Image 1 (tube, one colour):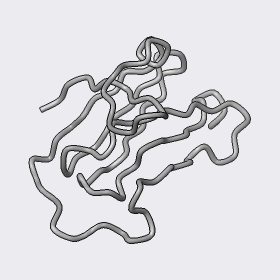
Image 2 (spheres, rainbow, N blue to C red; image 1 turned 135 degrees about the vertical axis):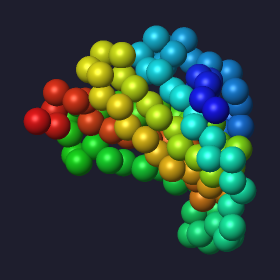
Image 3 (tube, rainbow, N blue to C red; image 1 turned 180 degrees about the vertical axis):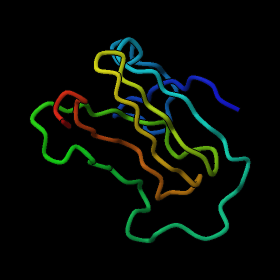
Image 4 (tube, rainbow, N blue to C red; image 1 turned 90 degrees about the vertical axis):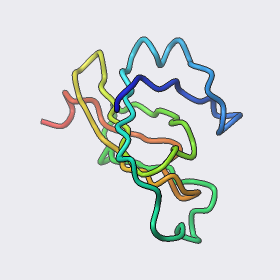
Length: 109
């Protein structure tokens, strides 16, 4: 099951209010695995993880994700500007990603 998922705001991790700027720039889909987590969260990240997969690129995007995710699955994010598509796995636990940063596709080559 896939559907577009609204962005969250930095001030409220559990908010489901979309940011019009982010909605215009990204397509975010939730791909639900239909599974609940089988193990507990990583105790080092009980308030979520900020993931940076930009490899230090000078042009990168940062995006807040709905946090925590509903359960095990993946958020697929596609940039409408450069076409880059990235996926971030979730487990529906406190150690899920809450913010992701990734390089612009033109900077990866």
